[in-house]
Image 1 (cartoon, rainbow, N blue to C red):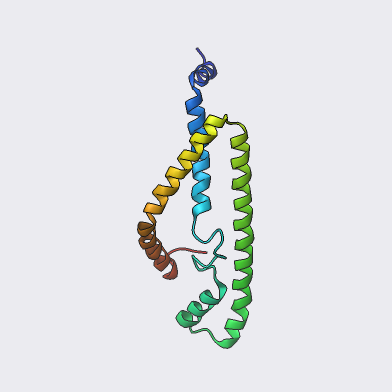
Image 2: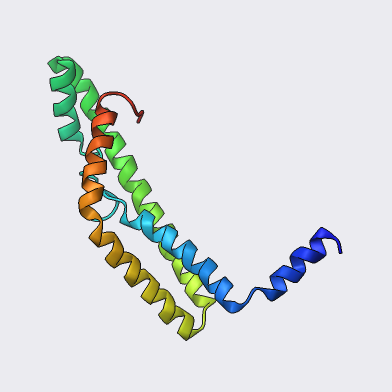
Length: 149
């Protein structure tokens, strides 16, 4: 039996559960992206996206002159606007993909998918405290120059 026939045979034996799980995994991954801090609703105030706060930190740490601050501020504001637009576009892509996936599912599968999303949301909410500690360390590393924008 050739490899392509073997693949076809395996695909025929994959049941609807495997298909559901594959779609559900894709939706869950997109859900993780939706949940990333600073992406929806908070205007990018996390992760150093707030131009005013970032300027204050840079001024303090680098002892920026007023002239430097005047030049850096519009750069930070432009970055902020671009990230907001990108986050909005990513959200639209995720929502579109979700709708397309759900259109391919039976009502029962949509119900199961909703349950999976709800369980994922509950699990994620239970881990918020842990994320904060990890985020703080990553942010501190970022501020030390260990990560690049």
